[in-house]
Image (cartoon, rainbow, N blue to C red; front, side, top):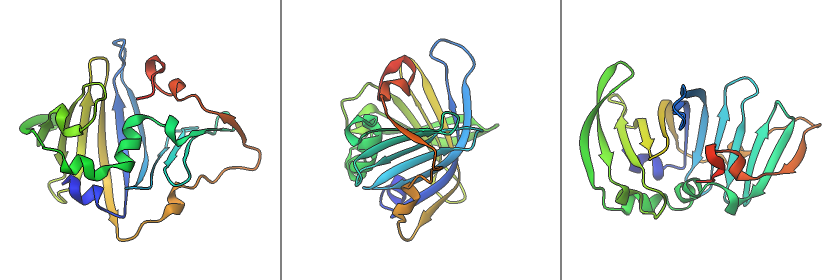
Length: 199
């Protein structure tokens, strides 16, 4: 299931993301699109009004966040991008080569019970804060459809809709098309996440 994604030239998908509130409030729901070029970069563009457009590009060594509501593109070096994003882009094979200590687990998702796998922390192959990851495939395609990840403070649920594997990568998908009057400012990644921590 994961090998087809991590070894693909490029993957595109629409996504729905639900993130919990670490303080116990209502969760935050958003929809957008994802472009993933293993070994090269990752982009997420929100479909929400004035939603962010985020690009992590290994070849260009950049981490960009465009906020239309501010008419600002925030720029940082590649090394300032969240560690898990960089690892996913740089070392997809490391995840595949890890010993998958996965256990079957059914969860109620989207109004139906789904067969999936709960993966142990060792599967992630890093020394980052512990998270519990559950993943289930779309029964029609066999590609990842639902992913849940949670730690001691918060959790995130992602649904991939219309996930497509392309036969050839298009690096232009990582390019931001910006209006002329957009200004550039330095980016502090700690401002992007709750608690001010780049993960």
